Image (tube, rainbow, N blue to C red; front, side):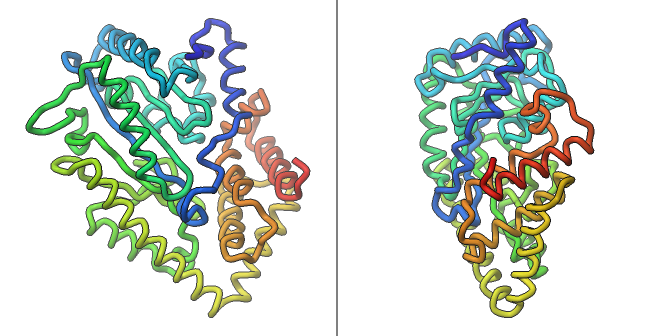
Length: 365
């Protein structure tokens, strides 16, 4: 494991985050099943150590002892042997925001704190948060509809860690967690879906209500407590108690497939009934993105969302979905500043963002 970010040297820390900024997130490739609508599949496992107070109520010494035990176990894991360690307490708010924008940490974890660490495997498909709401939060994330594969990898890592850690587990309730809603499997299975046609057709609220009635929940772009941007939603399970992990995965996958079917139908109807208007919106989005010299992250995401649908409908066949995926998730305020190596005001960020988008879309980046 590389402990670059635990160095005292500030330069060493910045270089490590810069490496992440310049590296490829494998789950952004857009090469998984149904990847034009299902952006990604994620499994998150919550685990705690037996005999230690859980993070929300633990003192600094307890958190320190937990982090030491977990990091020692992680060093022994084959799945994380080339991972990078990041000490959250040594990061600025911008640097923590960068990790949030990369979908590597939660909103709660982005607030920082002592004895909190992030472990990230190359490609960012596998990561571990230490001392978040629970002692461990394991995450696997894959492109498209690959919940089963994400679960397979998460389960393997969980098994490896359990050989060296004594989890807090109850024969009656399952894995014990800080939040009662996570007790049981401790699993959150989720799919990030792109639903622009359902939003345009005014059917999204009805869909979200239906998802809730099926025992699932739809959240915003960055998970719990966040809003939807660019017509992206995260569909995940609500219940973990009394279910097997395979049942959770099957249920989320089944509902997500139904959502995909409704989105495809909505796209077909839009193209058939309002084809000229739809093409005009996509064309205008392309025109702005390839010519703008100032653009906010919100406007960019909304316009890139339209381009992404255009590629799916073969209205923009020359575009690579991977390029659009990268632009959608790699042009946030914090990422631009980490990538440029300096603090930028809002106007400078908007200018740099517009430049990157222009060059990416015209093939000169």
